[in-house]
Amino acid sequence: MIGKTISHYKILEKLGEGGMGIVYKANDTKLDRAVAIKFLPRHIAKNEEDRKRFEIEAKAAAALNQPNIATIYTVEEAAAETFIVMEYIEGQELKEVVESGLPDLLEIREILDYATQIAQGIQAAHEKGVIHRDIKSANIMITPKGQAKIMDFGLAKVHGGTPLTKEHSTLGTAAYMSPEQALGEDIDHRTDIWSFGVVVYEMLTGQLPFQGMYDSAIIQNILYGEPHSIADKRADVPFEISQIINRCLQKDREHRYQTFGDLLDDLKNVGRAADSGRTKPKIRMHWKKNTVIGIVAAVTMIVVSAIITISLFLAKPINPQIVNTRSLVRPTNVRRLFHQISPDGSRVAYVSDQNGNPDVWVEHLASGQRFNLTESYKGNDGGMTWSPDSDRSLAARPASAQLDFLIQRNFTFEDQVYLLG
Image (cartoon, rainbow, N blue to C red; front, side, top):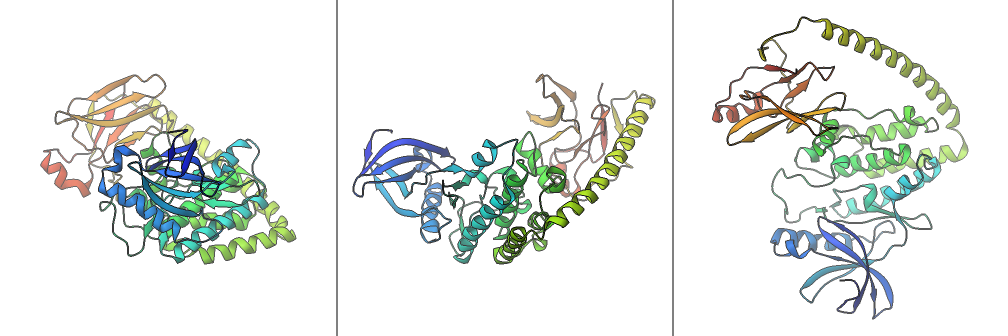
């Protein structure tokens, strides 16, 4: 493709590639200017749904005229290719900006500036009825002058538009997904508020708030875990900023900011306070308080972990491989995951259903060695739980919400524990 001329655009270099298109830098020979061209990959061009999504990206973004959103020039077809022509932005992805400085972190004032610009761009999209659905640091460009530009509306959802995905389908990037998006539920503009909170957390700490070795592990953390306190990651973050991020990352969307207008008001207030220096005393007091709490919590966790570990290793060995444990409390919220990472991160347990015979497997992540734990698994892949020491047992708990499925597969409903070694 590089070196070719399509219509009046000469392709110069490849800029990037994603699930919904390949982006090239090109020269518009008519206007003699650099542009970015996004082509729909040919292997999915025949799919009507993908073509519609490609077109809606252009329509959604072209309707937005805001300095913090990449400008769409036109949509064209030539030489059996369909492509969007947009402004070419000099600069770096925000993700690259954050990572290139590590271990040093961005300055608070710089983060507030980027966050405000990003929020203003998303707010403008929401006012036009457009939900981005894939806000992440890799979709935000930072120009040499410090201007933030939101790109890639490939997953955009336009209010009142034609549904382009199957009901309960999951789209987006796992680490930035809201809980409702990860579960495949209907989403609204508040999913962008969650993703925005993830991006700002990433700028502040250089890390993502919800991590995991696999997408399913990340989603489990999003649904059930809590991010590390920002104050524990860096001492110079004003308490007010931590509060803003915490509110963005509320799992119940009713408890998040309801609009970017309200969020922007708080960001601007924090910015003015930071400029005047009024937040500095609060930073020190908050840091000292959290330091003491953190030390107490850490010591408590060490003692509790030691007691559990000693108790487990001193316990009388159990001979049977499968032990019924009907007395275990069943979870009220069923996890819909296919595997479970051990607490120490050394192993993963998962269910493999081959020829209608589901088995529980355990794999050592470092060596890749795996073994079949049981030949007659009587649970399901929705509720596996490791013992705290990651070594003694793995509990498999049938999910009451999936009884119909279990009946169809002739599984029993007993909670069971599989002993390791």
